[in-house]
Length: 99
Image 1 (cartoon, rainbow, N blue to C red):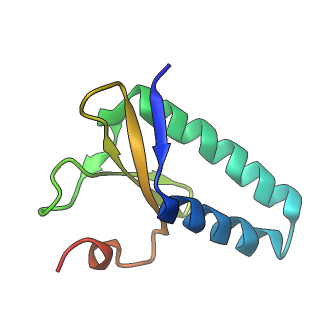
Image 2 (tube, rainbow, N blue to C red):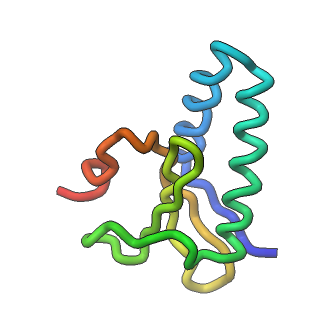
């Protein structure tokens, strides 16, 4: 089984998304998180699926899930990924990583 690391900012992003969805429907928020978990476990097994979009961080990758972007880095010394951010796709994600 591939390793899955979560940076604290990713965890906070996920909590914010859950709270946003849960304002309307907690069941849907739980379902979103459950499905997202399946998606990034799949990415941990296949880290090259995402696309590289960060000139300053060439190893960093993006993979879309619904209206969100999973931003992660494949692990160098072992199979798996490190989850960095979960951002809405309407955001200018480059501003979080590029100067």
